[in-house]
Length: 180
Ligand SMILES: [Fe+2]
Image 1 (cartoon, rainbow, N blue to C red):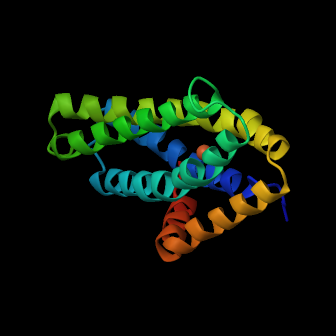
Image 2: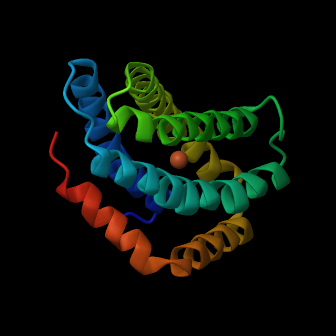
């Protein structure tokens, strides 16, 4: 078992990446003129809001990032600030997907374009974001946080994971079943 502090976040990244792959694939289908798979996009939006944003980003924003700031990393301008801005950008893309979905399912050209552009924007943003966290921010967290901060972060993660375990397990299952 991986005992690193951010192992659970990295594991969640692998789940999120499966959904990113599927979103990219579906965005391509929309661009090719295939009717929009409303059920897929609805599920993907719920996944992003509840698993990626509800569980994962909350573990980062409420637990990990504050501990890094307490350990002396700047809140704004530094890597934590950049991650927070990117989380907000992600929420905007998901809002655009949600907003355009009904029209896109009804076949409206402008809504289809908005849906595929927002999906692609989200995919590109999140892949780069995940890469930065995995290779820069998380290793930094292992190094700058002392033992008591480590244990506070671990407890905070466990609390977040205990909040909606059934919902989160269902999202993991769904992501695992996606084919791209
Ligand atoms: Fe993350």
